[in-house]
Image (tube, rainbow, N blue to C red; front, top):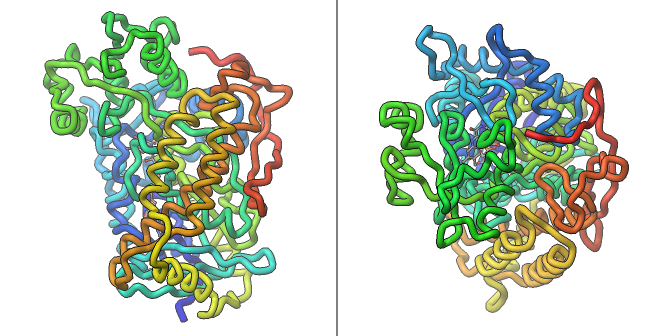
Length: 557
Ligand SMILES: Cc1cc2nc3c(=O)[nH]c(=O)nc-3n(C[C@H](O)[C@H](O)[C@H](O)COP(=O)(O)OP(=O)(O)OC[C@H]3O[C@@H](n4cnc5c(N)ncnc54)[C@H](O)[C@@H]3O)c2cc1C
């Protein structure tokens, strides 16, 4: 039987950093990943990673910007720790071999990003995520560990409130297997495919978050969903905030630089929630282009700068929108981009379940609170990936061997085999498409009560249909019909948690904008939402926000 000290699920930046830390602590480590590690969504990150380095910037400003960006919902003790670790983390990644872009004097080049009081986003052209992912992967490849590649996490095993390992599905053989572990780290990344219009890869289906939730872990702050202001009109491919960081500007159909109205000081570089709402408002009030979009103009920056600093953006715009940003504007609209919520953890990645840890986009520490700043997420994967790896190793060393057995995989296998035997039943693809339509139209940038309640009913009806889902393909090897079905089930659980949290939170804060409750309500809602699985869906409770030095103020940019 397969057995390890520390089992990391996910091989993106968070998972690989966690694995490295646990190996360095002397544990026998394995990684389970449904993708080849270098195909993880971290590799799609374009704009950069934040760190206050150099004499002119300060860690305190980074902390303040993150606290303000979070609309005061981020835990300030965690944010302080996070921003202090930023400099050493970036230096370490450089020592691991990341080739960052440089200024003329040879120092690390930095670009301004939304909501930041100083240009502190360090980058590798517009391929920062891939540069970091390759470097951590090369570093990890010098260590001994087991990689279960193209294996899917199906469920997290918990008995007597302790995590014992996981059940996983091997895509190549079609086998369901128990992998026992003293400690498990969930680092399965984003869940953006809850929405149809998203910048996230098709693989971003929140599997680990949903599995941890079903096993008894609390989900935290799920109602906070980030919409990135600039995604290509049709494909929703991301156009990095780095494009505005380099000097790009947004214009409406009248040729007006409309951000001047919404954020007089920093204009196009306001926080993402602010810019997304501004674009939405322009379009809804009739100042968008026919077909509902606005323009992102880069032309004034000149060919040399555009093609060297934003090469990939040029490529995407030319190939997927048929426009050349050197000579014409890029048509953009907001799209789902990031989940502020996730598996609730402390600073060390620990969840409420003993032996279960989480890091990266799957987790919610919370440093992003109600709205994440661009460039803080790559940093989060590395800072808290390392913390979770260290904490999981420490826990594993003090824990007895996991009592999980081969038989633990039987229940999942039977459930999936029953779906394969059905001769009629629901199509997973139809359920997923309908869920995405509901989320796009009723749980988007602006929310309000009757549409949210209706969305919840629709998602619950889809869950009932999912109970009778059918897997048509009965083959053993590379059965993508089966993995798609697993993913659709995970997305439905998360969609429900997002909506239930959004209905309950009767205020507007950060990315959660209620038209029926347009004000932030610190007296009532300065608290984190916790969702625990119940028989009839998520059961909510609340936990306090940690404050250190910064008192809540009105958030203006
Ligand atoms: C297009 C795009 C651009 C971005 N740009 C930036 C940026 O410039 N700066 C920034 O700070 N942030 C950016 N972000 C956000 C940031 O990239 C992500 O939040 C972060 O990289 C997530 O890393 P992760 O390690 O948590 O997850 P990922 O890198 O997504 O890795 C998840 C891993 O989990 C595995 N996995 C998932 N499900 C299963 C399962 N069921 N079984 C087994 N394995 C599983 C996958 O195989 C993968 O290896 C961007 C995001 C996107 C989508």
